[in-house]
Amino acid sequence: MGHPRDIRPGDSVILQLPNNEFKLVKIPDGEGKGDIKLGKYGVFRSEQFLGHPFGLSYEIVNNKELKVVPHKVIEGIEETTATNELINDDGKFVQPLTTEEIEALKASGAHATEIIKRQIEAHTTYELKNEYSKEKYKKRKEAKYSKGFKVVEPTLFNICEYHFSRDASKIRDLRPHTLGQLLNSANVRPGARILVADDVSGLLVAAVLERLGGSGRCLVITDVDGPSAFPIIFHMNFEPEVKSSTIMSTLNWAAVDEDYTPLGVARVTEEPVEEAQSNKEKYKQRKRKTAANVLSSLREELFLGEFDGLIVASQFEPFSLVEKLSPYLAGSGSIAVYSPYIQPLIEAQSRMRPMPKYLAPAVQETWHREYQVLPGRTHPHMNMPGPTGYILTAIKVYDNPEASSVLIHRKELRAKRRKLAEEKAAKASEPITHVKAEELDAAAAIVLLSEDTPDP
Image (cartoon, rainbow, N blue to C red; front, side):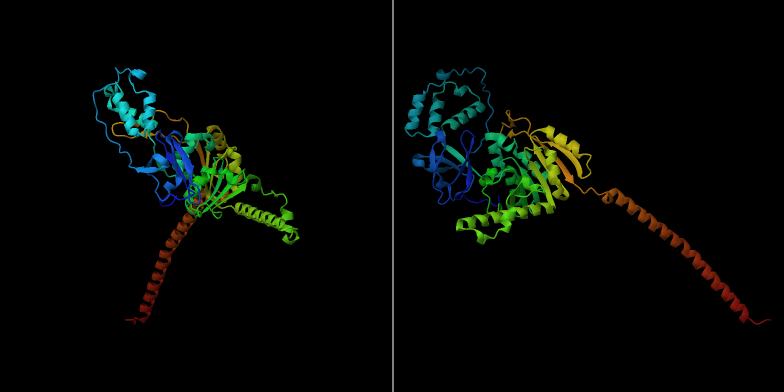
């Protein structure tokens, strides 16, 4: 996402509503003028966001105007001896303030805090509640009457959370923590060359592009042509250089086959442009020729291989998909496959394990529990989904018996032993030769002395 920046025309923003639901909206291009409707909470003009940073809280006032409000400070709650055991909340007897009176207050322009205050004053058993129950009561009423909301930046985590809460099937139940582990398992980093198979509405492609940060290569293999296959990318507020064609390109599954020949390619490449009868036909022919050249260059790039990683979140059978794309990985290339079901990954692991070109295939399950962290009220969330997906990981290695590290180690040991034996033999022969030479020199000196000494 880069450094924090202000909101601009054409950006997407996530609005956190008083009931803790999220709404994804897009500011119009150009001057950014338009109306954003939030149902019962009201309507406001979108251009009021422009030039403001993400993270501010707003409140809708009259005439579609917004007012920046300070963030609510979480305060500690003092322990009391109050208990809810004897409280009998019996509808209208406990809350005598009728719906008509509340609607009249809203029509008169009363603020949400005033309405909540009037309800608390009229509540007959409010003072009998303990402090935690009072806080929950206020939150429920704020979610019902407040017109405030918070602008959240569409980061990868927030986008994933938004789609998981709205329609998890569109992203195959892929949760943020599972997505993070999937990226780490595939060793996605700036400057890497990554093969991607994405059937999660572009969430995986957006995650890879964010990790690459404008340097590297992302080649996406898909069965759908066109940008409509990855709608999530358009909500990430990427800079143009992050999602440019030099960084990300798409290739259809049919074009992955080496024997694939697109229809009409020979005619398009051989027919000269001048033979077209009109300017419209010339334009169409140039467009077809450009598309054919781009397709040819992408296929050539794929077949050259040497990609650093393969990351998959697809509806297709995992093993056949990995077998199809793993030949284009470089040595020590990482493989990471996500599935919401464990059975396909277990089958793929069992078939990959005896194959020497896959190192350490393993299936991992990721799961975490979210906690509410508040002063005196820290506890795990009670309602959470169960399984959060599974990841199959492996490393691509070259199937070459001569490249075995064990054989190389044995060869090195034999070479060292042979060298040590030669050195020992050389050292053992050197002293013998030296002694013999000294003995010969001493004998020769005695002979010379005996010859020079005169007889008595």
